[in-house]
Image (cartoon, rainbow, N blue to C red; front, side):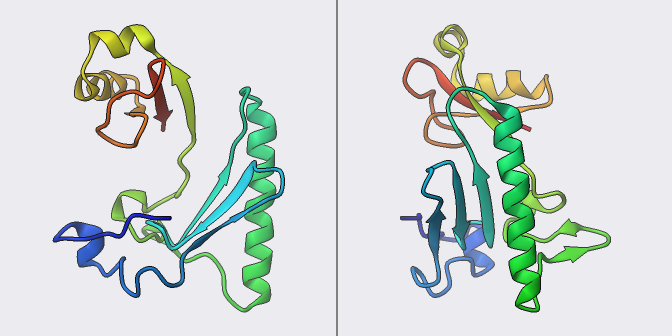
Length: 151
């Protein structure tokens, strides 16, 4: 289900693949619009998504899910790990801080034809966003020039 972190890379060196594949999984709402990934790259990844671009509904669902997860964890005597200096704590140092990555899949066929994946990534940086290809970071666009654009 998840790709095991291997090699000398940061996540593997930090022990993120320890006890692989035990203690990992995805919990999915019946609607198929809300997911909680456990112990993939981050300890917990909470996802709300749907086709059509209703950002208010997506964010409202995500916010309710975060609050529900918070109350469940606190009821178990735990909670989200937070440090006054670093913010929310994650497995991957690139996610330290707010832990919030909002993304949208958009079609950019003309840019996909004109630029390589690395050129499009550099282009996106000029606008303060990140462009990921159809299969993640540093990959080509998906069908029709589909890119994952995020903060």
